[in-house]
Amino acid sequence: MREYLFSIIAALAVLAGVRADFYTDGLPQPPGLKKRHEAFRAKLERRAAPNLNATIPYFERWFPQKVDHLGPPNNNTFNQRYWISTTFYKPGGPVIVLDGGETSGAGRIKYMHTGIGRYLTEYLGGIGVVLEHRYYGKSYVTQNLSVESLKYLDTAQSLADNAYFAENLWRELPANLSHIRPSETPFISYGGSYAGAKSAFLQVVHPESYYGSLASSAVVWAGENFWEYNEPLREWGDPVCIAILEETARRVDSYSAEGGSVWQQFKQMFGVRNLGDRDAANYIFGVLWMWQSGNWDKQEPGALSWDRFCNNVTTGVGGDDCVYNCEEKLLAKRQQWDLERGIRNFAAWTSASVRRDCGDSDVTTCLGSLGESHYKGDSLAETWKLWTWQVCTEWGYFIPGAPQGFPSLMPRIIDMKYVRRYCPYAFNMPVDFEVNVTKVLQYGGYNLTAPRLMYIDGTHDPWLYATANSPHSPQKDRDDELNVLIQDAWHHNDENGLGDISKEPVRIQDVHHQQIRVVRKWVEQYHKEKGVTWTAPPTP
Image (cartoon, rainbow, N blue to C red; front, side):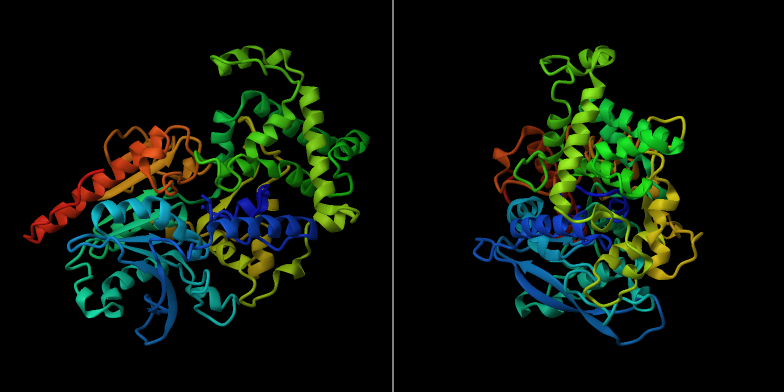
């Protein structure tokens, strides 16, 4: 989406890594944000574009997919895009299906070249597939995105797509690969974020089609109010930086409640005086969404954004000379920090962002909320409607400030009414609409387990509280090979790799080796059940 995401859009983006998913098109944007979005999206797409000269070619193909799996039987189909490579295939090897999730599947091919898809196919003699999600990318289901047309866009239909694809892929392959079907070959699903949740759900509804699943940062829980999105940042972010943000949020709430000249002067300091109160707060705290871009590979888009921001706002505040036991020392010195200077730094940084985004344009026109009419388009070009529809109808994930009694990085003036307002605009819903999250929670939520389901999460992931390793989850203390919580890792940070495990940080190497071992066991078990001897490639 861009380096600086904004709360109303963050509520939409479940979630991707590059966060490819989190960089979806987002909502209609005022001119200043649209300009920034388009520049960063172009940068992202250049990095995520398939390498047509790669030594592991992935060929674009089209699968005749059912439009409706759940209604009365019919013959209506659409062309679902997928990419496939048999470069590493050896008889008996698995089919690794990487779920494209809520974005163009093209952006996922990099993970088959240098990430988890590469490792699983290379070391297990597998076939690699990237399966694009219905409606996203070029997998068009309908001719427009009206409310009537979007009725086939939901998680259950997409899960059925994955199963039908696995059962019928052999029909699209050469005759010598006619055995590539779940009854003769193990299919393994991998997904990250929303796609990770889908991978987990497949073990509930279609275990006959997918023998095992790797679910990375899998958001198995859904709910309307997801204020805890910012809790991992509050826990793991630089203490000085967090103190500045918390104090700024407190003042935004206090000054905006009082109104008057103090509030106007505060907005003026941040360069947003002419914006409405909530729009101003929303713009100022758009910085919070940088945290999700964190990655052990600092070449990933946005991976250094948060550190650069914090380096700016903490300059001269205190604690800069800390080397050992930094967190304890900094917390002890908190009362000595020059938070006023930190807030001024934050304001200067934000004002510079306003100038960059708007130039000489009027700030209200450039950054203010768009009117309801901007949400009414329903052509296929309105791709922002896709994940927005899923959020508004079954996932939720609206991100307001924290409830009273909890520290809050997001000002509480950013309330549920504000972050939910676009659903009625876009889809003619009543203002008091309810998201049907039971459509997601029916698969098990925090309690979802299966014999061949592996969870991989990161301690720093802002989506942690929606995963099986959430502090609220009964699975959070699991200590077995099917549950991994990577220290110092963000959103599905196991999905990307360097193409050579030995060159990765040790903690990432360990996870990638463990994933290979686990899937190897599954494939061996599958063939043992079939009475077939399978000789696995050497363990890396």
